[in-house]
Amino acid sequence: MIRSEYLIELAYLVATALFILALKWMSSPSTARRGVRAGELGMVLAIVGTLLHQGIADYRWIAIALVLGTIIGVPLGMVRMTAVPQRTALSHAFGALCVTLVGTAEYYLQAPQVPRFTMAVLGLEVILGSLTFTGSLMAAGKLQELLPQRPITYKRQNLVNLGFLALAIVLAAYLVVNPGQTWLFPVIVVIALVFGVLMIIPIGGADMPTVISLLNSYAGLSAAAMGFVLNSKLLIIAGALDGASGLILSVNMSKAMNRSFTNVLFGAFGQKQAEAAGTQQARPVRSATADEAAAILAAASTVVIVPGYGMAVAQAQHKVRELFDALTRKGVDVKFAIHPVAGRMPGHMNVLLAEADIPYDHLLGMEDINSDFPQTDVALVIGANDVTNPAARNDTSSPIYGMPILDVDKARTVMVIKRGMSPGFAGIDNPLYYLDKTLMLFGDARAFVGAIVRELPGGDHH
Amino acid sequence: MNIDIMTSLYVFMLAAFIGFEVIRRVSPLLHTPLMSLTNALDAIAIVGAIILAGEGKSTLAIVFGTIAIVAAMSNVVGGFVITDRMLRMFKASGARK
Image (cartoon, rainbow over all chains, first blue to last red; front, side, top):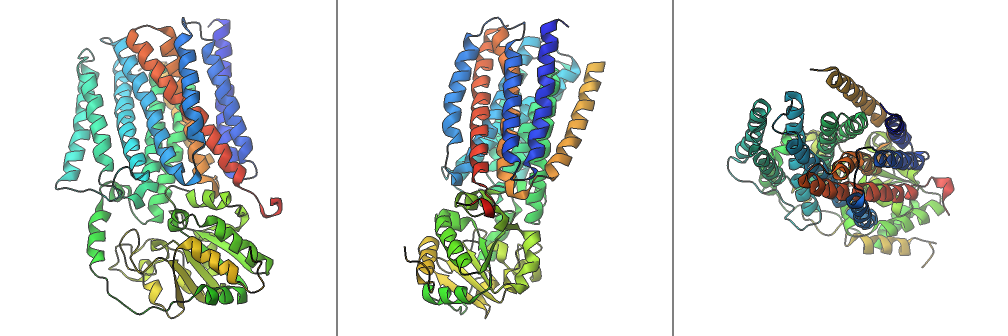
């Protein structure tokens, strides 16, 4: 190696260490921003190191592309917090696009003499890259509501989908043996692109947290595959870290919904929810006004607020913060119970509440808060439904039976803010609403919480 | 099988183990910023794209390499910006204004 190459490799080595530190510092909110700095520094080192590479003959296109990428990147970094899930899906698509393009170009540079291992990894790289590209675009489209959110199913769907994937893999295997058949390469890419679209069609909006995490994992693995092709340890490590992260998050999400990967991917939920919707019947519920709700909250000493995606849709988080402040001033102990699948991606609800200025030490995960419910005076459910459904615990015929839930029904009084009695996202009726201790607060989440804050005895009138 | 491939496989295996161990410890509070951060780090694929576009071994390599840089760079910039924006919002009780 010549001296500059040593320098470049050293820069990569330091960058790798910084990347691992970046993830390590994400363990706590107090060190997390340091993690971002470490990641940025590592990225700058790696890019500058690469630019010093001896083989680079022309910097024009690189410069133009770097500037263009920055111009596109800045607005993507400035989206509103409710739009973070679709932004994330879009960035998985961009990452996968990069990997697929580099893999394709690399194949045509090496063909027809491509070593078998390289060819196999290239095949893996472009299949994963292509299906992640279109799959992520579809996911982003569904999250942005450009595409219908409900799952679209048809006969023999799984068979057709798997057929496409199997075909792509078989063709890639054929290329490993006959790397000179250059016409096959774009065919594989196109099949994988089509598979990516078909894969997401049957998946409904409520399953998006799992799907985004899985696509995150694929994006990472395809980058790691690219590292094998280019013999870049830095890429292999970054890809493996990203792949591991996506995998852990998707396992978390699946567990939180009591479903397996295959169950999420092969859309069994779509059928079950149709059955459940038919079993609805009108049963009496108790309702209350904002005035009454405020009186009950003011008399409580412990309150747990259970926010769901409906709260974010109604843009109620700032009113919820006002309620939190008003109750805290009265000496009421207020906590938030966050189900792992609350929101449209892992951790989404925490970000939305943090944005509303609610201190993170009041945000508790399901495992930490569930033992508190029996000692809780009031559980206030805002825009959440299925994650509070006791049927998941005791009704074996329920489609969500076995799903871990927040034990809201164990609180002394339950209040649920809801527009009407329509069933939730999964179309499943919630027995919680018919309990004697449950008060339904009908109305728009933002307006209702605002009304409660105004009615709180001795509260400040804005 | 040559020695490079074996070394790469070892590197991948070790990195995957480190990834699992480090990421298991990430606070569930921060799972959204975690995903946007890993996304930005994953855009390190930009190094491959830069070499491809810069070496200019074929027109295809230049065109694809250039588009790939744009895609990866937008992830680098967008990913770090949004991660930091999110993390700035997380405040402990004592730190509130």
